[in-house]
Amino acid sequence: MNFIETIAARRSIRVFTDEMVTDEQIKTLLTAGMNAPSARNMQPWHFMVIKDRKTINRIIEICPNGALLKGAPMAILVLGDLHISGDYCALDCSAAVENILLAAQAEELGACWIGVYPRPETRETRGPQKIVQAA
Image 1 (cartoon, rainbow, N blue to C red):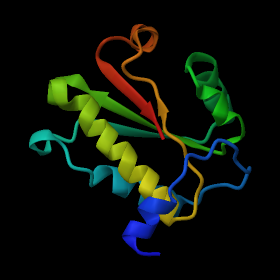
Image 2 (cartoon, helix red, strand yellow):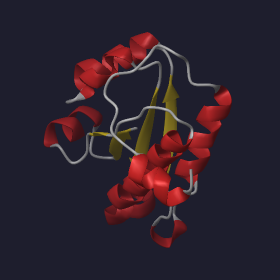
Image 3 (cartoon, one colour):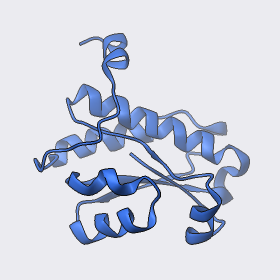
Image 4 (cartoon, rainbow, N blue to C red):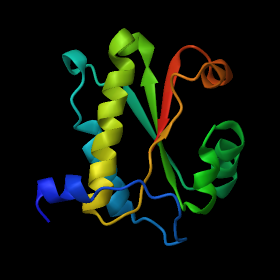
């Protein structure tokens, strides 16, 4: 599949199998995220790979729209540090998430973006210093 076909084929998947994502696939997804463009190349993101079921369940409890993680074997949280890139942080993290989603499609993995920022209730839960997205 060429790149344009990968873009055209990408869909938000909301029902998952319990098949584990390999460490190599996770590395591919993270590499894609880390290679996203960012303002002044500040790269304000931090990636958290979560495979622990209890932690995923906690995300489901506190995250609006998090219920789709119910069957997901893992999640990647993209955390943005406002101290690094300020007003551009949300844009930078969005670019990283999109790269992760495209890499997931290329790896034939189902994925869905759960937008958390800029909802006020999620900012209050996590504090004003972090921007959180889930891929």
